Length: 640
Image (tube, rainbow, N blue to C red; front, side, top):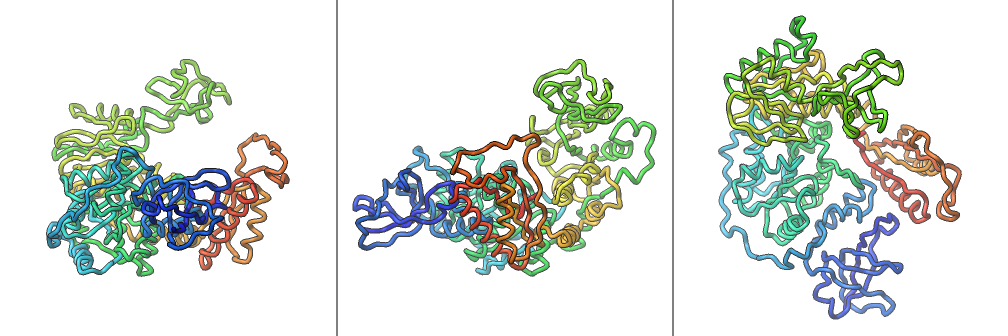
């Protein structure tokens, strides 16, 4: 007989602990640590995971397992420990993390997969194709059994997918294991294409089908795969002891989970690197504020090509603000200097024009008062397609501004289709290809053509683009948000990997902007350190840990009293109730405190006692759930 400690999959925060259950003789063989089971708790059946097993006598009054759902181990001890650490780090519950980390069981996948070593005779590592001495030195240290941590600032003019494929193939053949986390499925496919069927490699991510994701999870758990490549959920890949953890483009918003506990893939890998003593690499053409902080503290060391190579390969950056504009430039957002630059570069290959929006004219406004034009039926913003219309209700032949009565409109934003139309007139006899979310293009052959694409959907071309132009660069600088500049810098520097070495890169942006200066000199670390210094002054992450709490006003007041001794910096509270929201009474006893049913939000920023603050907030969430109060939403280090 045995007793097992089970973590139940329940959304209730106050059930975030283990519960003991007895194991019958029939279940003794299958009820091992890491398997999925079904239990009964307070009259309700829950699925759960066995986290611990103790052999010995069982208390007769102890409830037994309902059944073992599958004998396959899907939650090894190391992964369970990581999930617990992530839940504590983000003031969440273990159940929230487990539903993201462990895929649902699929009956189409066999309970047992083939076993045996993947490669009984590992080959020696070969880094000759990398060329960069700092990177080669890092990999040699990894081969020697060390577990270094580094920030890899990639060289412009070099696509990242072949470099990552070279790394993955070398690690696999040498018998080393790794987890590589990329922003989206397009990036994963790029690396897999460059790998050309390397054995021992599986993919993980939310975009996979249920059967494939469950099969790949088991393969990683059982040792049939030593390399896992995927999107953000791949951070929980159940490799026993990964030698290397690598994340590419860590500032991309796709690396942030949109469900509780709202984890960031980069931080989860950093936690895992500490728990499992793995090497850790943050890679990208740009440098995040968090990476800059880690570099300054010595937690990471920089991996970068020589200054001479960067000077020779960096883009030839220019601005349309530096030239005298003609009368024709006043009626088009593609000035003459951009047309001439693109026309010259077309002799050497395809050129790229990156725009901020898809569609024709996605936003229009009143010509007189500049109020945004909206549909009278559904209130959606009107757009030109190229006729004026609503994306939901269809064409709007007659429109008048409700404020001033004006019927004429003007464009507020220009989309990819309108940009392609303008380029077709300005550079005739040249094919124009549009790649946006509604019509993505993954690859194009070499040759003379203009590519108009939104950020992140640029087609791959052999050898890279001969030139690039960003007509919406000025609008990028005007975006609001805490991480707006960091995101702008990421997009601009990422173009360096799409261009050929020393190719022209033209921006419609003022030259006095620090972001433009950083791109001109190819100084990603400098602009990241500047961003970090500003976050320090504003008490924002990563200089400070922030905890954003949304709850009823009375509950926020109670929370502020509890955290008062920690002396956090308090931003807010602010009312986040919807305008015109009706305050309704709830059944007696469900919410005992009816003083205020409006939702408010507060941001708590702290640095020296951050772990104490997060633990205290997490305990308050559990207490409110146990008292059946209204739910509290907690986000640690929120993006905005």
